[in-house]
Amino acid sequence: MRKALVVITALLLVAFALQFVFAAVGGFTKPTGDDAYVLHSVNGMVVIPILTLLTALFAALAKAPGKLIGLAILPIGLVVLQPLIAVLAEASTDASGVSTPLGLTIGGLHALNGIIAVHVVVGVHRGARRLAGLVPADAGVAVRETEPA
Image (cartoon, rainbow, N blue to C red; front, side, top):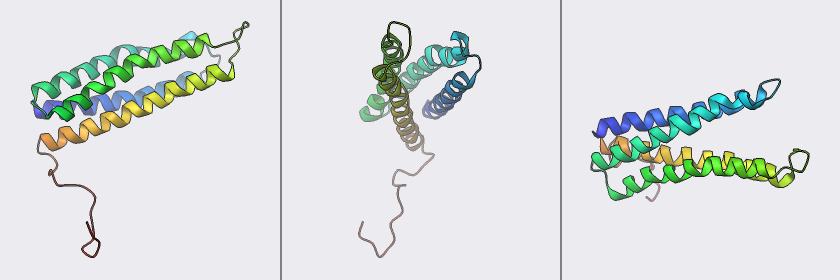
């Protein structure tokens, strides 16, 4: 089960990387329309939530330490927050549907939240690799002999 946790976290990281690619595809599609972000939407509302739930489940089934299980659960909240931020950004347009500084700032929070989620999943993946014995538990930053630890 521990190796399965490593695999599912790796798949989740790939899904998040693709999410950024799909956002760029939508942003650079001309003419821009609602269908420009369809890959971003499907990945963000179907694939990533499923993989996130599986990550939390596999962490519990792998009998990971409580801290790692908590870290595995955290992206679920961040993923749920994403569409709420997007809707709030869309709702912050002016009467003619043009973006406002407030709406653009909120939209930036959507990207920032995604970056935070990726960093959390990286931490879960590292923890999963240690738990599975793929990385020594004491592996970390190398310290030269002459430097204090």
